[in-house]
Image 1 (cartoon, one colour):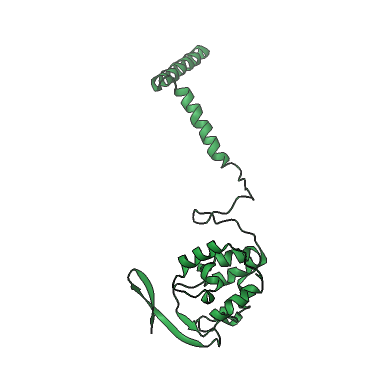
Image 2 (cartoon, rainbow, N blue to C red; image 1 turned 135 degrees about the horizontal axis):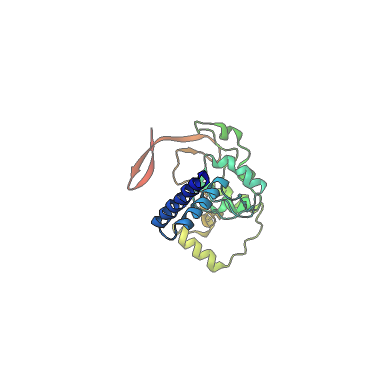
Length: 210
């Protein structure tokens, strides 16, 4: 009698379960198994990280041009703390690629680097009269076609009507600060002007004395 009673209860339980599954729909069993599989995946964690060492680093969503990690390029980072505008400036970037850095032209300049008031000049500066001679220390020849030289001259410095007044940096690179808060005499290295305030003028920042 007891066995018959338990068998009856078991049969009723199976019928209730079948009814419940049927009420959920024909795909209920599949949905339950799918949910279980998804839960197991979450518990297992993300897939293992694969690092491509040859891929360029992406900073702020943009990739910078690939350049050699030369001694000069690494040393230049100390200068870019303040002179960030020169990091991608053509003259500085191309020279760094060839292992010629800021200090190769401007000296180690430790007092300049350590001066938070920005009143100490670099060890070496170049007045216009010294630029060509300095460039020729490495670049002994200049084999650019005449028509390219003239085109660049007219595009970049048409105000210089005398060819003898041209210097290398008139055509090559953008190796000048757009905004200057300090000016030194490039021959004597003496401070001749200090500007501390900036004002907006005509949509551009202008340095102001004071």
